[in-house]
Length: 422
Image (cartoon, rainbow, N blue to C red; front, side, top):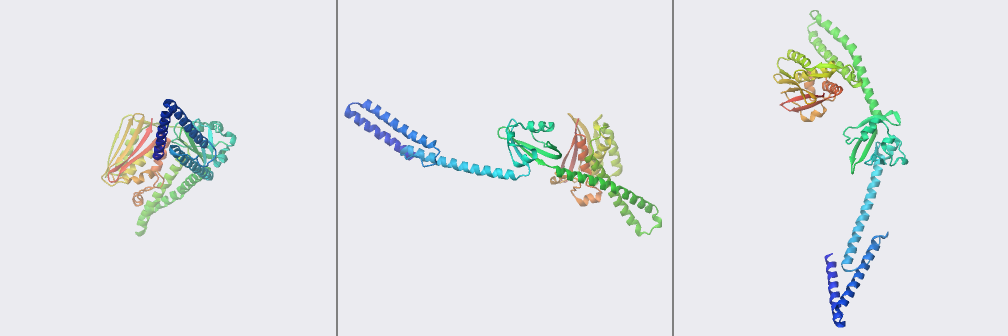
């Protein structure tokens, strides 16, 4: 570009010198310079006209032949056009690739404009929601009229997905997720989770049925073992240890069956509508007294703000809090401190069960409330745990609009916080 610019400057200087010489010869310097300037202007305009004609032509041929700065400009414009054409090809190839990928998805993908009108969707969305070409530009609220979906799609944040019956088939269950991009556009994903929910229902029914079926034979076993132990004087000595082990394991299995029954009920039944005001301090005081009787080698203290009540089901809340307190006893060594506190902060009721025990590695914290998940199988087996306690706690709190927060540090202890919105 610099070479062409220098060439053009040289051309202008030479033209000016030539015009001055001609003007001196004919005695019309000003007129000659004016005529030369006008002529150079027409020359320049002709160059610009050719460049414009080439730029706006549909042909992709070479630019017009020019010298000096105009030649450099044409070369640069040609290279720029080549890059633009290549970018268009790349974009077209990428768009085709994206369409092929989205067409292969089992999940429906829908692009909405900022005003929630349909812009584009993949074939899976067509089959799931019965969209047609005439729906393009239509508000999605007019096509899916479920009030829960209308509220979901018009919300400003999509932090929580939506699960609902299919708008065109009440026997199907759809899972909707959404996110924003660009200038307020929305990408909406829809998945058919009917089979997944059916499998979950089958699992819940199986667990509930097997738990109930275990109760009767376990009751019979416990009864016979107790009968044999009550007549241990008439039994051979080598039977005593066997009966003690049988009694221990049978009772452990009974506890597991009871926990499974309760967890199944929490998952499958709606929250109890007959709720009452539960005196939190009285409930926790009773639990702490029982805990001190069970374990005299842990230092158990309590601090409860007077007058705390929570609307809920007494039996469920008692199960949740007792699980947390007795977990602190079972899973920590003798001599550690366990402190239970309950207080109201702003519009929340917070109950903390804190200990100075062995703590839990951070990698285990996200999975602690999964059923049967154990940080240490050998420790849980020796303490008689079922691996269901925290799962029960999570479900009970959810039924009372509460959440469980867990913080822990290895060798320093753990804190389990039950947070309820009042």
